[in-house]
Image (cartoon, rainbow, N blue to C red; front, side, top):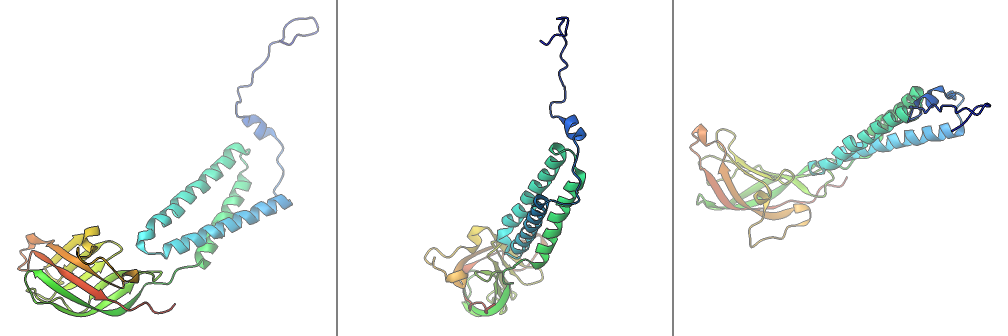
Amino acid sequence: MPRDRRGRPVPVNVSRDLFAWADAESAPRRGIYPPTRHDLGVAATLLIAGIAWGAALRFAGSLPVDFGFLLFVLQFGVGLVFVIGLVSQLLFRGFNVDRVGIAAALVLGGATLGLGTGPTVAPAVTVAGTYTYVLTLPAAPGGGGILACEWAAGRWRIGLLTTTTPIGGLPTPHVLSVDFLDRQVQLTDGATSTLLALGDAAVSPPPDETARGAGDRTGAIALDLLQANLASGSPDVEEVRGVFRWTCPGPPPG
């Protein structure tokens, strides 16, 4: 314990400012202008990071829906890290609001620029293909016709198949659509009859036929659809089973 000139003990004042807020507030602050080389380097880094973030968001947003998790991570995850970084700068760097504001403006401005100029994958495109079907329930003769094949964004796989020639063998003509991205198969007559199948099993091939062409341009699925609106008193069938096969040409270039 320290003592004065007469040898008497001198009490020691223990600071209660554990995080040194007072020191940070009382410390002299260097002004924003003129900027140093370090300031310019940090500013350039923040601007480039913002542009990269915006470009990544634009690219992820152009991907098919089954890449939605990547877009969520870029939007929420990176955004949360950015906000935490700004708050920590305010709390632990002397409440320098001017510099934090400039950092936020640089990153958000760069992100806006990236969102407008970033790359995207090729958009979805539809081509004409052909299909055949065999219904086993209800028992009906096989048939076939023309099919609209939509290559999903990026054009590396088929996203949606829609028959343009109606499915026959039912009380009313029905249109079949197969959504590979959402894993949904729907058979509807556009009025009262809607039959659905959802999940991985809805787009699964028959047990004896598992091979598919590149990007699902050719293949087969085992139809097992149930009536979705029985309460409407539809006169149509309550269940449809069979095998649906399709062939689609490749996507156009670009």
